[in-house]
Length: 281
Length: 325
Image (tube, rainbow over all chains, first blue to last red):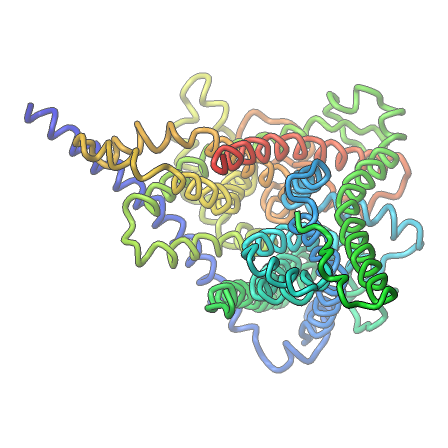
């Protein structure tokens, strides 16, 4: 008896230790990545880093054009993608609960959510870049918007579903038509959740590289022309980190640090927004 | 569900009521149009890729899928090395990530003090927030050199001489290659798998758990005999979701795979994946056949991931349907 008991205790101890070890591994990897970024990236940060454009190897330079390009394409991608995602998500939550169309859209949307982003790049290359005859920041922003949409659809639908039916019924009882119920009551109740969804989506597209390779293409010079190839942070990191030049690699580390911190801050902020105690619920 | 509020009409002038009706129709139509747009988008991606891939399929036929040759100069292209690398790296990633993810899920649901559950869960999820390109830079400049001098020589010395299994661990330690790519992929898909499995574990009814504890089961026994059998479908769904992600992952793999269009038995040898081939060669492809072959690769990748993700979502969806019932 004792030996069975001891063996069960030992088995329990082993399995629990392994699960603790697994969790520790995950956390350690996270900290190792952040530590590498800080160690190699901080030395790159200087005034030049933010105010000069990408240099030729051996010259002094920074990533100003890449910051601008990433910002603009993420901004345009969000301005285009977020409203589309919110409206499609609204349809799923408010008009199509349980309908066949709703289920089909939900199913396809969940697949697009994890679909390889490089394929989206190839798609936009074919329908925009080939037709327009040149790479452009518009095409880059379009592929980012396509990647953002499924994220926003998913979170919007989830958040609207959480709004209690009694709120809608109260508004309907006051005589509001359904579109007013949704826009003025349901949206307002679910605002934080929807904002969280958009922020998580922005965090996702801000670091996307693959879909920009064949659309925005990159540019080593300062350019504000959305109809021309545009530099962007992820692609500069790709190009510079793979180069044999130490100064380019340093800039790549600096860019990697900045983009990772921005995305992590955005992620944490999004979660904090979601946790605010909500009014009227 | 929330039918047109007939009561609203009382006391409104007919044209005001008509305006509200119009508003309802327009808003509903607008949201429906964008929802259908999601379906159209998927169709458009498939059609555009199929159209672009057609010349390559027409020229090479079935050989495209089984040929190992990838020669841009002679314009002969075969997808096999890229498909092989895609599947192999994803499998390595799964072998490493799934046990660790299950471990994390067990820790978060059964072992972790409730106060720490959210923060630790959030830290693990932050691994998913780090962009692919960062994993690539880290893998290339930090992990690969370490593997080259530690893990890989160790594997070659200890496992390389064993018959049969040994071929997997032979050849020089490049640092870059299939194994390194699989390792980095494992870290990247870990948070997705862990999150799904944790959520599924949470749905196990407390009654079942407590009955087992009441009978004197240890935590490990509760996990093995109650929690895991109860969440089998969800675990498979989470694993498939991670697999779908691993198959399509691009930038991180492009950095550490070594980019070689051949098939080698050794896991330490460099190779390529579909996504890495696209990332490296798409903008350099000058001829129509070359471009079309690359688009065909993209189509193959999209179809494979679509099937895997469809299975994953179907299993998870069936699970939540059961929950709701």
